[in-house]
Image 1 (cartoon, one colour):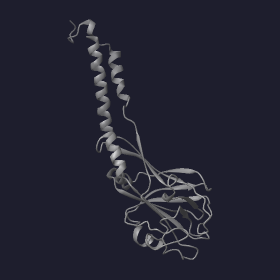
Image 2: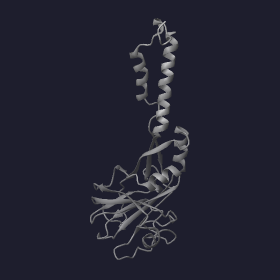
Image 3: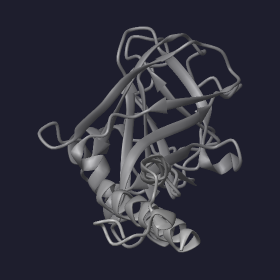
Image 4: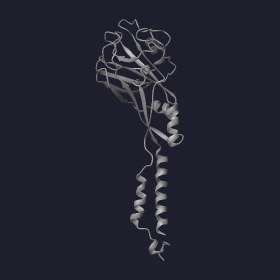
Length: 260
């Protein structure tokens, strides 16, 4: 009998042990993606002379971001998402709270529009920020028939933007044109990750970041071509390590059984 208590017949070759342990690099879990459409969106505008600053455009078929010096004035857009479904999906896949946010991408589809209220599409830079105030109201105004029952350029500036608490999520390039879908990878600021993990409502503000940009894109009213938020999550490292270690131990135990 060998000192380790196994007969020569039952001795486990070192190569077999190493092969079993190598299973720890194989993960039975993978990243999961959840896609959601907005619950509210609206553009706000100054108009050429400030004449549209008090108007609401929450039910328009297009959204816009445009620089202040353009002929039809400045445009900004606000978009709100409900993230409760993302939390439910990731909890079901990985266990309650046993996951972390890997990436968040905002998908937009450029849109042509014949309404003279808009500036023509033009290449340029725009920014995206996370708003801490989610209480804005979408409203029912359109590009042809504005209303005053929801967010306006004036109320956005005076009530909903807070430069001390809102978080910058990046500056992005629009190449110009009036068709095609583009994804914008957002910086994982603490507020963004926290909103996703908490299943909270999340509001994004899109605003011009240079003197040239004029970006028109489909609103949620258009359905399939409207904005989408794409969230990717992965299991927590501790949970992952426990799972693969258990897999390796099980494989080693099964190997020993077969050798007896």
